Structure formats: structure tokens, C-alpha cells
Image (cartoon, rainbow, N blue to C red; front, side, top):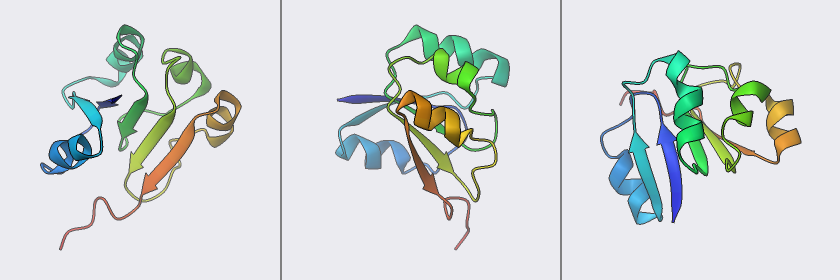
Length: 102
């Protein structure tokens, strides 16, 4: 089972949807940006799901040595250092319509 840290508010259906895919969530939208590095270092997270709370940088990735993917829920990936992800072998997933309302 994959372990994913979610640091921003997400749709209420997300935990059930990802659990069905074999992903266990640590849903922590209460984390402040400054607390995210320590949270990544505290568990062997395979994934990190963000909106815009933090910039995903080389320094942040270093705190999550088990990361294999970063998910950006929302339009654009301007807060993601794509070169740093590529260098670390971390896959970037983007859900640009995740913030759309119906």
C-alpha cells in the first residue's frame, strides 16, 4: 500500500477514492507550510498531494526520501520545481480541474 501526505483541503470523496486504489492517506490540511518538511521526514511517504500551500523544491523533496510522486490539485504547476522532481526520480501528477465547481 502506498502512503500519501495530503497537506491542503481536498474534496471529501478523496480518501475513499484513493483507498480503493490502495493508497493510504494522512490527511493533514491543518499543517502550516513550515511544518510540512518535518511531516515528510516523520513517515515513509510515497506521495505528497498539494494545492498551493507550499513550493515543492529540491530542499522539500530531500525531507521525503521515499517520495515517488507529487500530485498538484489545481490549475498550473508553478509551485512545483519540475527539474528537482525529475532529478529525484519523482513523478508529477496534475489534476487541473480539481478546483473546478460544477
